[in-house]
Length: 81
Image 1 (cartoon, helix red, strand yellow):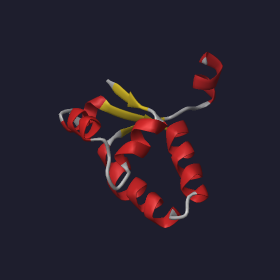
Image 2 (tube, one colour):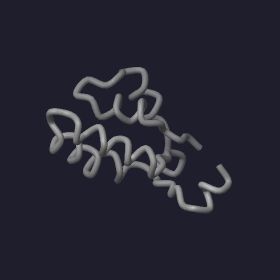
Image 3 (cartoon, one colour):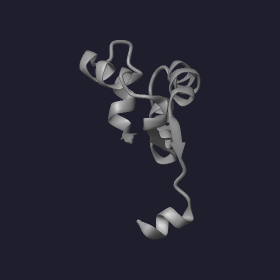
Image 4 (cartoon, rainbow, N blue to C red):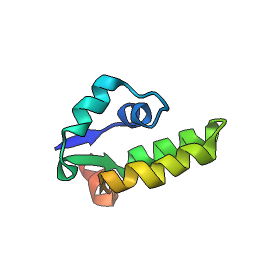
């Protein structure tokens, strides 16, 4: 299981992402790739602060989210945290 953080995801969504990171991720099965709802929120927040919000949100919706499993951070997870 790989849980990607905001730094890894924003790197992947760049126009020129890290070749090493792309190589490492491309060998993973979808069922092993995860992102949390917190990371999604951070990416959306950063997209609105960027100069190209629509571009970043489209990449998030059309490229990233279909390619990974999403872990919810609900109230039960908050209490455990």
